[in-house]
Structure formats: structure tokens, C-alpha cells
Image (tube, rainbow, N blue to C red; front, side):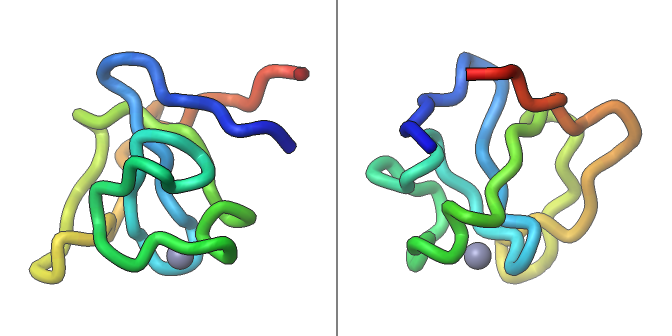
Length: 72
Ligand SMILES: [Zn+2]
């Protein structure tokens, strides 16, 4: 699994804890603490389809927000 930087308007989110990062490996995280386990659970989403909770993590992804993985 290679690192992929999200294109403009898209972000990686961890489906386990809701943390976000600009790249899958989390070298450029949005939430502090985006780690290896987040990388394994990460999916690419449209930034404007995310609902954030009080803790600044993703609470919900609205319909059409998940970007289907492309074959590498
Ligand atoms: Zn996580």
C-alpha cells in the first residue's frame, strides 16, 4: 500500500476513529494522533461531505462522500 496524497477537496479519514490527514500515511495530518492504525483504516472522502464532531473528528460521511478506491 503506497502513500497517496489526497487531491484538492479530498481528505483521508480513519473509519475507526475519524481522524483526518492530507495523505494516507499521515505525514501531513489534520488531526493530531493520526497513526499507523489510522492509515490501515483510511478511506478517501470529499472534504465537503464530512460532518465533524465536537472533538474535530469525522462523525459522519454524507451520501456520496466516499471515493471508491482506484486500483494501484
Ligand atoms: Zn484512527
